[in-house]
Image (cartoon, rainbow, N blue to C red; front, side):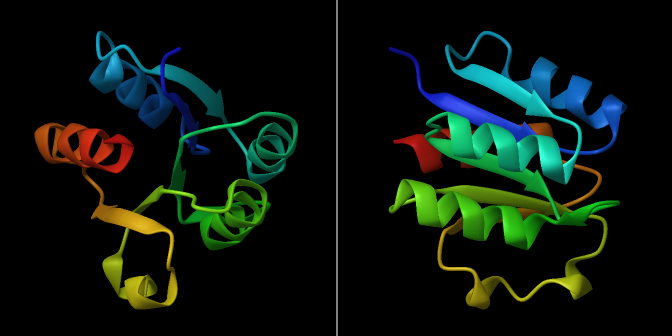
Length: 117
């Protein structure tokens, strides 16, 4: 069974970019375009990795990580932000990696592979 990844971002262009970056990797990718949609998917499914934007119009990616950690236990997450100054990665135990936009595709896919190893 392929590893399950949930990607949450309110930007449809970025969701498309993530899909292209992970195409052909063998991972099963689910997409969420809002905090509420991502939270519902986390609560109703099992994922091996959460990739989330930091800021949504209806919530914060750090709160999604908290929901994911509570459900998954040993959760692995990758956080993406428009500004790293908004983030203190040491306060997020499940954080496998974080990236500032724009993403470096090679570094991102390497982080996904490492998080799922």
